[in-house]
Image (cartoon, rainbow over the protein chains, first blue to last red):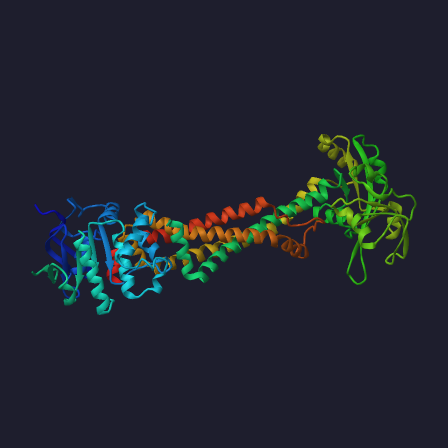
Length: 221
Length: 391
């Protein structure tokens, strides 16, 4: 039987914007299995980031159920969601979000600090793995865009999450660096990390095993 | 990797802002230290002058106002009111008095205004009222033109025992018969001459500034005071030395209130400054804080982080301010001396003690810590999804 990392069942999400109600997601059902490498594609405003936020325990759905590693989380408290994010999910964003005054090594260790782990042995290993072994003590400002994103990926993996969510991870990179990042994701996936990646770049999609199209808040294919 | 290290690294992002925030707390801590040092110092100096270092328990004076009385009694202030010498006979009938010291005190400023000499005409009774007096050289008054001088005056005038001293204001010569050891009181800067000589110098024969009384038994103070009030003419006052100092300190209360308001204003400015700065620091980092939440930072983690940032500034600023206050207190004391309209004591007005600096440090640190709470809670309340979607 396939082991699901995360399951969305009839998930809807509505926002109120002024007097208008925005139906960002409408009855979305999606199962992400262990070892999947999925690309979520769609136009701007299609609802892909909203889906990502719900999968990443950053938001509650308006209706439907979300099951992360076998546990329903749609009604979970803020602190329970925080614990889930700490242990089960790694985030990679387009803008890297590295703390400019911390070294690369310290940036990668940061999520571990919130888990109560102050050591940086794993951070070093991860930075070696992403090819930044010689840049440990550099500040983010001294790195190229590709290097910053590789550092961000290492940071997403520091708590050994089974699921990595990446929102436009190559959006700020040139094609050469984008390819390097995608190769890194492929390698991680081969090592057993489940990856869900949001993009609207067709070149990126071809690196993924499975593509989910989303349009007007619904999965279209 | 620790929370403290992350907090410090955040403070380094905008060093000028961090410095200014710390400075605002430093100003508060310094102001508080100075004000407390002045408050304690002035009280101690007045009490020392009028209670601890005089050996006099009661004063007979014609001045009812404690400020006026102190001015006449301790500083040689000019007053049209004089105690008549013939009341000494009445005082001699009071059994509880161990010593009676009639004295004539006056101050003379040189023509160029550069120096004021204090002369005190006294009798031998002063020796029983000042048991701590020691002579560095020579001994007590012998003739009408004898003078005993305080340690400071001997040093300033380069005077030695046996030397003649000329005073141009009175066109009079004195012979130095004794030099007192330093007492760290007004005595160090005083010329002691025989009572009759002093009265003659200002053409006030038979008139006294006041009469100092030493009691045989201090526990009978109230009883003796009542007895003396009954014995003295109606326009005479019997003032306890403590009563005198307390009266002056009461008058100083207005100055104290102004100083406290000053501290309060400094604190308010500092509090709003810190809250504003830290809030700005939090709002500028909304996206980063949102990301920290994404990677598992809980509300408490963020409160801890922001609080640590503010506390670091608060501790550094408060410590620097408290030390600065210790250094500036004597300067402020001298400045205050020139502005005081009430009694100006002879000793140092500011007494910056380590305990005062510690108190200012602790109080300012607590204020700094309290200021961090609102920005920290704002940081904790950031909803990552909203920030990442809207920014």
